[in-house]
Length: 174
Ligand code: S3P
Image (cartoon, rainbow, N blue to C red):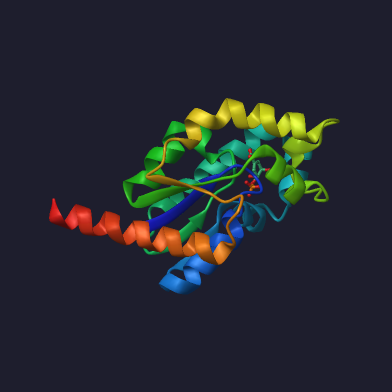
């Protein structure tokens, strides 16, 4: 069984994923990092040179590869939830945990970063709100969700571990 982290950009999937991997002994994998190492290009360059659609294809290839593995903590890019085939693959051997945050929180976490091609817009906060609204039903496709606005990564990890244990107990009882 894998632990899969989904959520909008800037919800802390990578930081939480790394900590979670340390605590569980599972290996940490980040789909964006895998795409970058496969192509030898960073995400911004892939968007710039080949466009979003091509990036999404690479993303689905990587998702299908990691979903077949076991005992991994998989941190996903914010748009992974948009394709049913991605989510079906991840769910086949994974618990899906969605990390949430308010648009204002995302904005303050990302405002000085330049590595999110989808947020290269005049009004970044408006774009965060727009995308988040559009994606809300997709992020709801998860086993449980955590509001990260007020929580340090260590607390989020604790919550995930508690809930995951409860879920495993429930499935073995059934
Ligand atoms: C994206 C999120 C990014 C990255 C790409 C597209 C999205 O990952 O995959 O820029 O569509 O939300 P993070 O969620 O890790 O920032």
